[in-house]
Length: 140
Image (cartoon, rainbow, N blue to C red; front, side, top):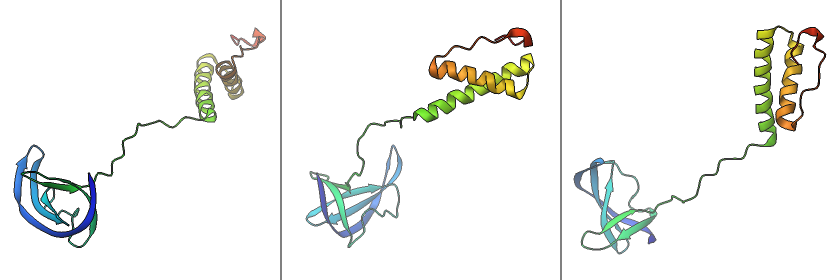
C-alpha cells in the first residue's frame, strides 16, 4: 500500500552483498513507520530528512520501506504509419528498382521516373502497366 509522509530520520546501517552487488542499508523513519531501505548508492537520495515522500511500507519481523513505484503498466502500441508514409516508402522502393532496371538495360533519367511511376501505381492502385510501343527496345 502506498503511503505519504515526511521523512524524520535516515541512518546508514552497513552494507549487504546480494546478487546485484553491494547494497547499502539505511534505517528510515517516516511518521509512525520505521524500516530498512536498500540502495545501490551510498549517497541515496530517495529519502531525505524533512522532505515529503510517497513510500511503500512492509511490516513484520524485518520491516521494509521503499519509494513508491511510479511505473504504470501499459502495453506498447507502435504508432500507426500514415498512408502518406506508406506511399513514400512504396515510391522510394519503386524508384530504386526502376533505377536498377534502367542501369542494367539502358535508358535515361526520364525512363527511371516513368518506370518508377508504373511500379508504384501497380503497388498502390493495382493498375497494371500500360501497353508500351516496344519499338524503343524497352520490354514494357
